[in-house]
Amino acid sequence: MIVDIALVLAGLALLVLGGDLLVKGAVNLSLRLGITPLVVGLTVVAFGTSAPELIVSLSAALRGATDIAVGNVVGSNIANVLMILGAAAMMSGIVTRGHDLRESWAMMIAASVLLIVLAFLGPIGRVEGAILLAALGLVLWRQLSSARAQDQDATDLEGVALGARWRRILIWLAGGLIALPVGANLLVGGASDIALAFGISEAVIGLTLVAVGTSLPELAASVAAAMRGRADMALGNVVGSNIFNILSILGLTALVRPLPVPAEMMRLDLWVMLASSLLLAPFLFRGIPIGRLAGAGFVLAYCAYVWVLL
Image (cartoon, rainbow, N blue to C red):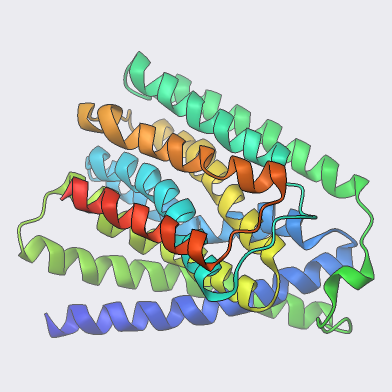
């Protein structure tokens, strides 16, 4: 038990460090490439912080624990919106006006609906996995096309060191992308052993403990971004991660092993995932800031969801 607690603490430390490094590297990368931090958050940061979900889901599928593999993705998407954006908003508030995420939000909703349809049609097998990966290819093509069409506004990055060299940027990005998944794995491994010692089922572990653990990189990166005044990157990270979680992680995992979706997830959790994503619509389409009070409401909603599960 002492070893497990030590692993949890070490994992948390790596997540905090990795989140800060990834945000610094990604913001400076956007300067060098002449694209907005929002697009970097939707791609580089989102993919990097989704790495723990990929590792955990593939590992669970190879062990035959498909409930954990699916629950990890569904639970992480719920946690990303309610817990992570909520926590980031409680710390500094998130300004949505001026950050056009409507198209990316629509992609997130489409990915969620696609997952629900595939879940009700039967096990998510290799064909369905290929469909998810093909949809990911379309999303990446669209995001990169948008990035090339946008001009970088230097005044948009006030307070960021404009003179960062390529070597330093690469070190920051590599350090963040390495520290985040390693930290998440240490935390999930230790926390899972502690939970199993208390007799908690794999399905509940996948939807709660593992989902929260693998979402901690998004939490670390989003809070670091919000505290640095990069609300656009915090939002982009969460929306992009949710898209990657469904299309890339479930797509790749389904190629390894068919993923039957448990009936209880189809009754509750998939719909909570969709509802939490729809909750962002008024903030993004009307430019309403996600303030501290709204953030607290998000976090309380997540606590209520976990209470229902348990």
